[in-house]
Image 1 (cartoon, rainbow, N blue to C red):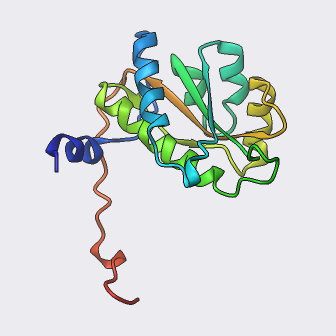
Image 2 (cartoon, one colour):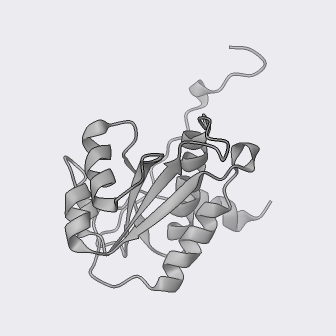
Image 3 (cartoon, rainbow, N blue to C red):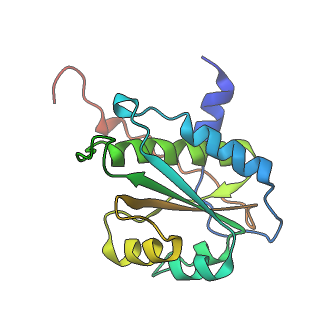
Length: 171
């Protein structure tokens, strides 16, 4: 087991405040490559990504407590195609998009960037502005919106280890 992978996982934190230092297109591509390396049920890979740098679209998606969306230099909307090629519903799209979102967050951490998972699906009040701002087709839904930038503060990872949540053999 590579310790660097564990270090990256255990160092990941939610960053909600960013400097105005720009993010390079190479950094964005690295994060997207990592996101697309996620596992996918039946290898359908329903994820679709919209990279947003325009202020108007970011402000439209910054609803409620998600104001950091408007303040980040780059926002990546992780979206999911809700239908298969056959036209039938893809029931795995949310799980696949969750895996892609986590990979994207881990890549941001590895690049020295800050990011935070802001939930979009299944909240209509968050989804509708994103659908409009991003021009999504009917069979693509916004799953999460990830603001990305260089951290303005010094956030620390949270210790979420709780042995009481573990059961062996049976509950």
